Length: 534
Image (cartoon, rainbow, N blue to C red; front, side, top):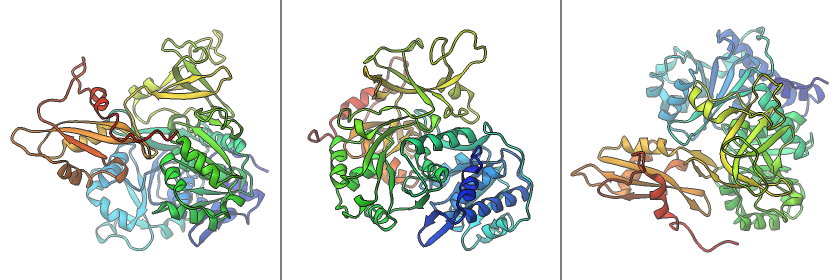
């Protein structure tokens, strides 16, 4: 049987093994692997017929559905690069991503396209729009084609690709400025699928629930992991946590990966005893899972194995804690996943001793290709390994780039890692990484606002809650309610602050003259703190 080298090979290889096996389910719809492979090929033919060249960026702005999966893998089959856009983002945010990576083709729905129309005028590289579902807006009929039209194109020869070619750009917020596009290769995605499937022991009998957004590395990993072993994956766009439990039971799901805020909500619900008879494992990513939540989930699922994972988009997946270590090391993020090495380094690049705090550095096949069109930020995060570290010797002339995560960790004597904290001011809320600067820019665009500082404060459910301190311009009266109402028009729900504080005068500065977020955040340390759950 063929071995997967390119991303789309995950599907064609599974189809060769068992063409009739169900690959993906969405509501009452499903596709077998052979049919999915055919749809992917048809999408690629349509893209090639439109004349998009190799490495052209194809953005997908849809909820989770069959067409989202087909477009993602079909883009790479055409030699292009797919750019999944979080379905919760607002038009202005979508427009920024389209411009930032020069998207040439957008796949979206008629409803979403209507909302995007004012923004698309500022996207000069966008040449084609493919509309999924019924109807094309009247003022867009000349430049858009339907999904059915795209898939009916004649067969075309795709360019020759290798595993180091670009496959995807996943956007992740930075500690400052707008989101950054992490460029992932075919090798990154296939190696990640193989690695994750190996330690989760995935197989063709598995059913995975895709509850996370496919614009997340961990969300898209549900597709690649399932397809790498010929398993089936169920797509869900849930409104309530109860919807997730219902899907687990209805589809007899064997593997669930989610973020702490969702698990915290799920832990508070009543679980059907039937779920524990087939849910083989549940995995956490996107932040530390509170101990009491983990304990409650284990009571609900006495026969399911818990996996605690850590990852960053810049290296897709990094570590996991085996279930047998949970009771001994419940706060650990584990050790490196297969085919990766995790180092803990000092600022001078030398290895840390056990229990010494240093920066987590990831090397191996999952190290991405850097940030799209941003050499400065790429150089900050992707650095050559020093000699004598990670097998590097003086005789090796070419440098090896590793991901310097910006996260402080420590390793115990047995090599198990523990997360200490971030080196930058990134806010991690509800499983999302949020840039404080991006929030501040929205507030600054609101009339009457003078100075703004956004930061994260520890929160028992969200991981961190977003807090904003703002000052008004002279002679202007601002209220928290007015500011929140204004910003909700421009921000998705997970980026709307939990607390807005209005002050007069100027905000504190650090020695460099910048607004001191850390000094402000220290005033709110106990804002959301309740009794210690431990």
